[in-house]
Image 1 (spheres, rainbow, N blue to C red):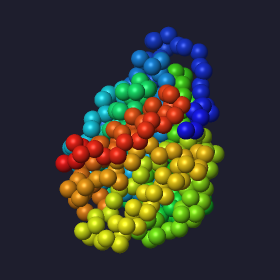
Image 2: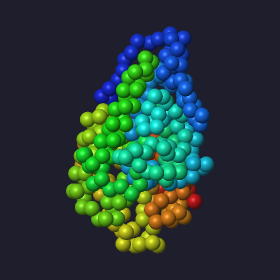
Image 3: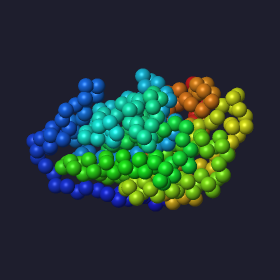
Image 4: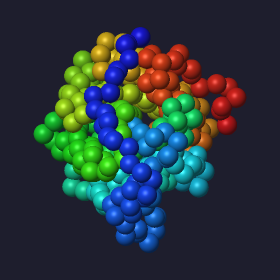
Length: 313
Protein backbone atom coordinates (compact mmCIF):
# COMPACT_ATOMS: atom_id res chain seq x y z
CA UNK A 1 0.00 0.00 0.00
CA UNK A 2 1.18 3.44 -0.78
CA UNK A 3 1.98 5.88 2.00
CA UNK A 4 -0.63 8.38 2.92
CA UNK A 5 -0.64 11.35 0.63
CA UNK A 6 -0.43 14.52 2.66
CA UNK A 7 -2.30 17.59 1.42
CA UNK A 8 -0.30 20.01 -0.67
CA UNK A 9 -2.45 22.95 0.23
CA UNK A 10 -4.10 23.87 3.51
CA UNK A 11 -5.36 27.28 4.42
CA UNK A 12 -4.73 28.00 8.08
CA UNK A 13 -6.77 31.14 8.44
CA UNK A 14 -7.62 32.96 11.63
CA UNK A 15 -11.10 32.14 12.92
CA UNK A 16 -13.77 34.78 12.52
CA UNK A 17 -16.69 35.58 14.76
CA UNK A 18 -19.94 33.98 13.60
CA UNK A 19 -21.42 37.33 12.58
CA UNK A 20 -18.39 38.09 10.46
CA UNK A 21 -18.67 34.68 8.77
CA UNK A 22 -22.31 35.25 7.90
CA UNK A 23 -21.52 38.68 6.53
CA UNK A 24 -18.72 37.27 4.35
CA UNK A 25 -20.89 34.52 2.89
CA UNK A 26 -23.87 36.78 2.27
CA UNK A 27 -21.72 39.11 0.19
CA UNK A 28 -19.86 36.41 -1.77
CA UNK A 29 -22.78 34.02 -2.31
CA UNK A 30 -25.52 36.45 -3.18
CA UNK A 31 -27.95 36.55 -6.13
CA UNK A 32 -29.17 32.94 -6.14
CA UNK A 33 -30.41 31.41 -9.38
CA UNK A 34 -34.09 30.73 -9.86
CA UNK A 35 -33.57 26.95 -10.13
CA UNK A 36 -31.10 26.02 -7.39
CA UNK A 37 -30.19 28.38 -4.58
CA UNK A 38 -26.51 28.66 -3.67
CA UNK A 39 -25.36 27.53 -0.26
CA UNK A 40 -25.10 30.10 2.50
CA UNK A 41 -22.20 28.43 4.31
CA UNK A 42 -20.26 25.19 4.40
CA UNK A 43 -20.80 22.69 7.18
CA UNK A 44 -20.04 24.19 10.57
CA UNK A 45 -19.35 20.86 12.27
CA UNK A 46 -15.97 20.50 10.54
CA UNK A 47 -14.70 24.01 11.20
CA UNK A 48 -15.46 24.83 7.54
CA UNK A 49 -12.84 22.38 6.28
CA UNK A 50 -13.46 21.07 2.77
CA UNK A 51 -11.92 18.62 0.31
CA UNK A 52 -11.88 19.44 -3.41
CA UNK A 53 -12.50 16.72 -6.02
CA UNK A 54 -12.48 16.83 -9.82
CA UNK A 55 -14.66 14.09 -11.31
CA UNK A 56 -13.18 13.21 -14.70
CA UNK A 57 -13.71 10.67 -17.46
CA UNK A 58 -16.22 9.55 -20.05
CA UNK A 59 -19.90 8.58 -20.05
CA UNK A 60 -20.09 6.42 -16.93
CA UNK A 61 -18.48 9.21 -14.93
CA UNK A 62 -20.71 11.78 -16.59
CA UNK A 63 -23.66 9.57 -15.60
CA UNK A 64 -26.27 7.91 -17.76
CA UNK A 65 -28.61 6.92 -14.93
CA UNK A 66 -31.86 8.31 -13.54
CA UNK A 67 -31.61 11.35 -11.29
CA UNK A 68 -34.90 10.46 -9.57
CA UNK A 69 -33.34 7.24 -8.23
CA UNK A 70 -29.95 8.70 -7.33
CA UNK A 71 -28.62 8.72 -3.78
CA UNK A 72 -29.46 12.05 -2.16
CA UNK A 73 -26.45 13.99 -0.97
CA UNK A 74 -27.71 15.54 2.25
CA UNK A 75 -27.43 19.27 2.75
CA UNK A 76 -23.98 20.21 4.03
CA UNK A 77 -22.35 16.99 2.79
CA UNK A 78 -21.26 18.14 -0.66
CA UNK A 79 -21.22 21.15 -2.97
CA UNK A 80 -20.69 21.77 -6.66
CA UNK A 81 -18.45 24.46 -8.10
CA UNK A 82 -19.92 25.26 -11.52
CA UNK A 83 -16.82 26.47 -13.30
CA UNK A 84 -18.58 27.08 -16.62
CA UNK A 85 -22.08 28.29 -15.80
CA UNK A 86 -21.61 30.09 -12.48
CA UNK A 87 -18.12 30.30 -10.93
CA UNK A 88 -19.20 32.88 -8.35
CA UNK A 89 -20.73 30.59 -5.71
CA UNK A 90 -21.22 27.01 -4.54
CA UNK A 91 -24.32 24.87 -5.00
CA UNK A 92 -25.62 21.86 -3.11
CA UNK A 93 -24.71 18.62 -4.88
CA UNK A 94 -27.65 17.33 -6.87
CA UNK A 95 -28.17 15.01 -9.82
CA UNK A 96 -27.58 15.14 -12.66
CA UNK A 97 -24.22 16.44 -11.49
CA UNK A 98 -22.58 18.91 -13.89
CA UNK A 99 -25.40 18.67 -16.41
CA UNK A 100 -24.80 22.14 -17.86
CA UNK A 101 -21.01 22.38 -17.45
CA UNK A 102 -20.29 22.44 -21.17
CA UNK A 103 -17.97 24.51 -23.34
CA UNK A 104 -15.80 24.07 -26.42
CA UNK A 105 -13.33 21.80 -24.59
CA UNK A 106 -15.56 19.52 -22.50
CA UNK A 107 -19.10 19.17 -23.79
CA UNK A 108 -21.44 16.30 -22.91
CA UNK A 109 -24.49 18.07 -24.32
CA UNK A 110 -27.65 17.14 -22.41
CA UNK A 111 -26.66 13.51 -21.89
CA UNK A 112 -25.93 13.67 -18.15
CA UNK A 113 -28.96 12.13 -16.45
CA UNK A 114 -27.78 10.69 -13.13
CA UNK A 115 -24.30 9.84 -11.87
CA UNK A 116 -22.33 8.23 -9.04
CA UNK A 117 -21.15 11.58 -7.65
CA UNK A 118 -23.92 12.19 -5.12
CA UNK A 119 -23.47 8.69 -3.67
CA UNK A 120 -19.70 9.21 -3.59
CA UNK A 121 -20.04 12.46 -1.64
CA UNK A 122 -22.54 11.00 0.84
CA UNK A 123 -20.39 7.95 1.59
CA UNK A 124 -17.27 10.09 1.79
CA UNK A 125 -18.86 12.41 4.35
CA UNK A 126 -19.94 9.43 6.48
CA UNK A 127 -16.26 8.54 6.94
CA UNK A 128 -14.44 11.88 6.87
CA UNK A 129 -17.13 14.21 8.18
CA UNK A 130 -15.85 16.73 5.62
CA UNK A 131 -17.89 18.01 2.66
CA UNK A 132 -16.60 17.69 -0.88
CA UNK A 133 -16.46 20.59 -3.30
CA UNK A 134 -17.04 18.76 -6.59
CA UNK A 135 -16.08 19.88 -10.08
CA UNK A 136 -17.53 18.24 -13.18
CA UNK A 137 -15.10 17.46 -16.03
CA UNK A 138 -16.43 14.52 -18.02
CA UNK A 139 -17.58 13.79 -21.55
CA UNK A 140 -18.97 10.60 -23.00
CA UNK A 141 -17.19 8.68 -25.73
CA UNK A 142 -13.77 10.20 -25.13
CA UNK A 143 -10.50 8.30 -25.43
CA UNK A 144 -7.42 8.75 -23.26
CA UNK A 145 -5.73 10.24 -26.33
CA UNK A 146 -8.31 13.03 -26.41
CA UNK A 147 -7.40 13.82 -22.79
CA UNK A 148 -3.74 14.41 -23.58
CA UNK A 149 -2.10 17.77 -22.73
CA UNK A 150 -2.60 20.40 -25.41
CA UNK A 151 -5.76 18.79 -26.81
CA UNK A 152 -8.14 20.76 -24.63
CA UNK A 153 -9.85 18.40 -22.21
CA UNK A 154 -7.31 17.83 -19.45
CA UNK A 155 -6.23 21.47 -19.75
CA UNK A 156 -9.86 22.48 -19.28
CA UNK A 157 -10.19 20.21 -16.24
CA UNK A 158 -7.08 21.80 -14.73
CA UNK A 159 -8.47 25.26 -15.47
CA UNK A 160 -11.76 24.41 -13.77
CA UNK A 161 -9.86 23.22 -10.72
CA UNK A 162 -7.76 26.39 -10.63
CA UNK A 163 -10.88 28.55 -10.85
CA UNK A 164 -12.43 26.62 -7.97
CA UNK A 165 -9.35 26.95 -5.78
CA UNK A 166 -9.07 30.66 -6.49
CA UNK A 167 -12.71 31.08 -5.53
CA UNK A 168 -12.26 29.14 -2.28
CA UNK A 169 -9.10 31.09 -1.45
CA UNK A 170 -11.15 34.29 -1.75
CA UNK A 171 -13.35 33.20 1.16
CA UNK A 172 -12.21 34.11 4.64
CA UNK A 173 -13.40 31.01 6.47
CA UNK A 174 -12.65 27.98 4.27
CA UNK A 175 -9.79 25.54 4.89
CA UNK A 176 -8.85 23.12 2.09
CA UNK A 177 -7.57 19.80 3.42
CA UNK A 178 -7.27 17.68 0.25
CA UNK A 179 -7.35 18.21 -3.52
CA UNK A 180 -8.02 15.02 -5.48
CA UNK A 181 -9.25 13.62 -8.79
CA UNK A 182 -11.49 10.64 -9.51
CA UNK A 183 -11.02 9.07 -12.95
CA UNK A 184 -13.55 6.73 -14.60
CA UNK A 185 -12.55 6.28 -18.22
CA UNK A 186 -11.32 3.54 -20.50
CA UNK A 187 -14.31 2.03 -22.26
CA UNK A 188 -13.24 3.72 -25.50
CA UNK A 189 -9.65 2.52 -25.14
CA UNK A 190 -10.66 -0.99 -24.07
CA UNK A 191 -12.96 -1.46 -27.05
CA UNK A 192 -10.22 -0.28 -29.37
CA UNK A 193 -7.61 -2.56 -27.79
CA UNK A 194 -5.25 0.29 -26.90
CA UNK A 195 -1.98 -1.29 -25.67
CA UNK A 196 -1.27 -1.32 -21.94
CA UNK A 197 1.84 0.85 -22.11
CA UNK A 198 0.09 3.41 -24.32
CA UNK A 199 -2.81 3.81 -21.95
CA UNK A 200 -0.55 3.88 -18.91
CA UNK A 201 1.55 6.65 -20.49
CA UNK A 202 -1.59 8.58 -21.44
CA UNK A 203 -2.96 8.33 -17.91
CA UNK A 204 0.34 9.48 -16.40
CA UNK A 205 0.32 12.53 -18.68
CA UNK A 206 -3.21 13.35 -17.54
CA UNK A 207 -2.30 12.94 -13.88
CA UNK A 208 0.81 15.10 -14.29
CA UNK A 209 -1.24 18.00 -15.64
CA UNK A 210 -3.72 17.72 -12.79
CA UNK A 211 -0.93 17.49 -10.20
CA UNK A 212 0.54 20.71 -11.58
CA UNK A 213 -2.88 22.27 -10.92
CA UNK A 214 -2.83 21.08 -7.29
CA UNK A 215 -4.17 17.49 -7.30
CA UNK A 216 -2.48 15.16 -4.82
CA UNK A 217 -3.59 11.78 -6.14
CA UNK A 218 -5.63 10.06 -8.85
CA UNK A 219 -8.28 7.61 -7.70
CA UNK A 220 -9.50 5.34 -10.50
CA UNK A 221 -12.75 3.41 -10.73
CA UNK A 222 -12.58 0.17 -12.70
CA UNK A 223 -14.73 0.37 -15.82
CA UNK A 224 -17.79 -1.80 -16.21
CA UNK A 225 -18.26 -4.74 -18.57
CA UNK A 226 -19.35 -4.75 -22.19
CA UNK A 227 -22.50 -6.82 -22.68
CA UNK A 228 -21.34 -10.25 -23.79
CA UNK A 229 -24.72 -10.75 -25.45
CA UNK A 230 -23.90 -7.77 -27.68
CA UNK A 231 -20.29 -8.69 -28.45
CA UNK A 232 -18.23 -11.42 -26.82
CA UNK A 233 -15.12 -9.98 -28.48
CA UNK A 234 -15.55 -6.56 -26.85
CA UNK A 235 -16.56 -8.19 -23.57
CA UNK A 236 -13.21 -9.98 -23.57
CA UNK A 237 -11.34 -6.78 -24.43
CA UNK A 238 -13.00 -5.05 -21.47
CA UNK A 239 -11.88 -7.87 -19.16
CA UNK A 240 -8.31 -7.40 -20.34
CA UNK A 241 -8.63 -3.71 -19.53
CA UNK A 242 -9.95 -4.55 -16.04
CA UNK A 243 -6.76 -6.52 -15.35
CA UNK A 244 -4.67 -3.70 -16.79
CA UNK A 245 -6.28 -1.19 -14.43
CA UNK A 246 -5.29 -3.33 -11.45
CA UNK A 247 -1.74 -3.59 -12.80
CA UNK A 248 -1.50 0.16 -13.44
CA UNK A 249 -2.59 0.98 -9.91
CA UNK A 250 0.22 -1.21 -8.58
CA UNK A 251 2.85 0.29 -10.88
CA UNK A 252 1.94 4.00 -10.76
CA UNK A 253 2.87 6.03 -7.68
CA UNK A 254 0.11 8.60 -8.10
CA UNK A 255 -2.75 6.22 -9.00
CA UNK A 256 -4.89 3.93 -6.85
CA UNK A 257 -7.99 1.92 -7.70
CA UNK A 258 -10.83 2.87 -5.38
CA UNK A 259 -13.64 0.57 -6.59
CA UNK A 260 -13.91 -2.61 -8.64
CA UNK A 261 -17.68 -3.12 -8.30
CA UNK A 262 -18.67 -1.72 -11.69
CA UNK A 263 -16.75 -4.45 -13.53
CA UNK A 264 -18.97 -7.10 -11.92
CA UNK A 265 -22.32 -5.63 -12.90
CA UNK A 266 -24.66 -8.20 -14.49
CA UNK A 267 -26.53 -7.44 -17.70
CA UNK A 268 -29.72 -7.03 -15.63
CA UNK A 269 -28.20 -3.80 -14.26
CA UNK A 270 -27.30 -2.51 -17.72
CA UNK A 271 -29.71 -0.87 -20.15
CA UNK A 272 -27.39 -0.99 -23.14
CA UNK A 273 -24.02 -2.42 -24.16
CA UNK A 274 -21.94 -0.42 -21.64
CA UNK A 275 -24.21 1.86 -19.58
CA UNK A 276 -25.99 1.21 -16.31
CA UNK A 277 -29.19 1.80 -14.40
CA UNK A 278 -28.94 4.31 -11.56
CA UNK A 279 -28.79 1.54 -8.93
CA UNK A 280 -25.38 0.54 -10.29
CA UNK A 281 -24.05 4.09 -10.12
CA UNK A 282 -25.32 4.38 -6.54
CA UNK A 283 -23.50 1.19 -5.50
CA UNK A 284 -20.22 2.18 -7.14
CA UNK A 285 -20.34 5.77 -5.90
CA UNK A 286 -20.97 4.60 -2.34
CA UNK A 287 -18.11 2.10 -2.53
CA UNK A 288 -15.62 4.51 -4.09
CA UNK A 289 -16.50 7.36 -1.74
CA UNK A 290 -16.10 5.17 1.34
CA UNK A 291 -12.78 3.76 0.14
CA UNK A 292 -11.25 7.10 -0.82
CA UNK A 293 -12.26 8.66 2.50
CA UNK A 294 -10.79 5.68 4.36
CA UNK A 295 -7.56 6.04 2.38
CA UNK A 296 -7.25 9.70 3.33
CA UNK A 297 -8.09 8.97 6.98
CA UNK A 298 -5.94 5.88 7.51
CA UNK A 299 -3.18 6.18 4.91
CA UNK A 300 -3.97 3.07 2.90
CA UNK A 301 -6.70 1.80 0.61
CA UNK A 302 -9.01 -0.75 2.22
CA UNK A 303 -9.43 -4.11 0.53
CA UNK A 304 -11.52 -3.62 -2.59
CA UNK A 305 -14.63 -5.79 -2.58
CA UNK A 306 -16.17 -7.05 -5.86
CA UNK A 307 -19.89 -6.67 -6.44
CA UNK A 308 -21.71 -8.93 -3.99
CA UNK A 309 -24.59 -11.23 -4.96
CA UNK A 310 -26.96 -9.35 -2.66
CA UNK A 311 -26.14 -6.11 -4.47
CA UNK A 312 -27.28 -7.45 -7.82
CA UNK A 313 -30.81 -6.66 -9.02
